[in-house]
Length: 203
Image 1: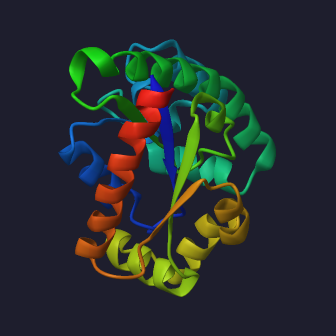
Image 2: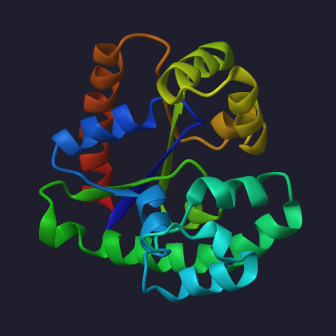
């Protein structure tokens, strides 16, 4: 299955672009959702995380306390690496399984892998093309702060942990400019959708 990786920094508008691809009958596999699935109650990864970090990262209902875990690993590179080494292979398996379902479950002849860390995590190896949703960093900061209710400082920290804008755009085969309106973004997605249908046919 011809697969396009859809990525962008926090607040860039990946979700809006993904929603438009879904409108066209595309199977959009969300890497963030896959990351949540692999740490669901009953999954081996959750038990490993509890063993390593303690019960403080597990809520009373048995679900992973993602905010507590994020606080433990965000400023601790060694702990972050430990967590990534545990979860990344499992996330990859979940993504591959979800992508494989595309021809049976969706009308479009290609699939989308939506991932904020497409390049950083090595998930770009699963796609044939990379599409970046891009906008100026000040606008990105403004939109992410408004959406999440986080302070600009918190958003800047998250942005700093992601690939720099110029580097991300350099990895792109296609760029969606999201500095304008939602309608403008959707029109760009519509154009790319037609191109991806042709590329999938050639592949």
